[in-house]
Length: 460
Image (cartoon, rainbow, N blue to C red; front, side):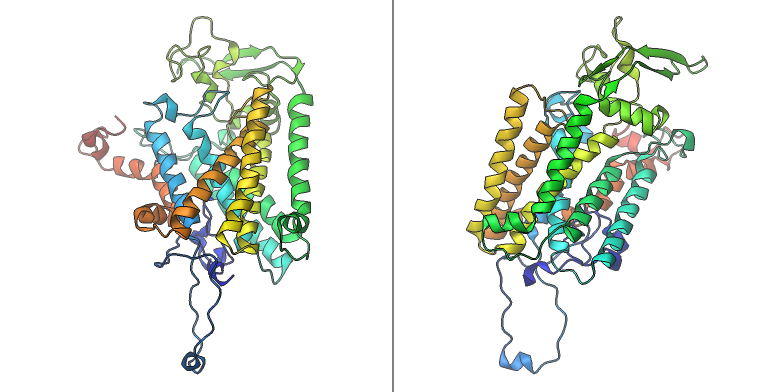
């Protein structure tokens, strides 16, 4: 157990607002930024037991030492950050790396579930021992609020695109949801479940583990059931939106015909309807991913000019991190929480891997079966089949990294990924949110176009 008590409390370091970045939550100790700063130089053997102090050491004053960390979790986080940067930079050139325009699964579609899975694992390690549930709940709420505010600042529209040396956002059009906002919601719900919804039962087997955390599984099932009821049961009426097609022209109004239930296409799904109703269409993401579909782009699967017979909904704002889809993101976080519980309660490598691979296999098989029988894998809607397949994939990758790094000790080859995992939030802000490129563009010669990025061929 001592090996996991190393995570410095988020409050000990404000940087720990990690993006499932929070590995910062790997314990009530400070983890690093979104994944914060973790570093331990010696490989972590998770099954370590505390060594008895020698006779001489017993006579020495007690000094606080940092317990070893779960290195594989940092490596997993760093690998996910690297994948995020790769798909952001190369996705436009290689369609297989870009997000799927609607149904289907690409490499980019694994990034968000992997982050959420990591948050869940970290929470189990963070809250394995609680002195005060109320105080822990208050701190969890504060951490979630920090992530939420940071997300609004980075993705709400305050920073403009590369090559646009202006900044600021009209509050009437600020984007309310985003990546960090989704992680904040999932983190808060999962944290409260871990704080309040676990019994005092002892754990010595798989069934006893399920009994101890049975109420958390009830929450996951209820959330999934609620999502399915809303997705397939709510009525979606006709709707309209306005966009400005020409800089100097009046906004043009487009009408979208729906009047149906259970539609999971781009135009008439419940996920978009809830966001338009609750958040307001002016607060949604203005570059919808479905604009890359063949119906909406002559350059599909990339963005491009509209075909002559493009449907009315092609240019409508749609948020890929909307309210209802973020509900299912909580389930991914709860799955990661279960994997963290296995780390906490079982110390033998073989037992851990067996208990990890059982739910992993079930999730992948169940998700693929759902897709086969008509519940399409869809990242934008965060469908149940997508939740299961990606959570299972996260489990497979985590087990592989755990075997390589924590069991076999092959740490040198992953040291860079470990470093990235320790500084995930910082890297996310500087690279994925274009803060660093925009900063460099602010220095130019004579004309804003004569900047450093232009010289090296970036952002031109």
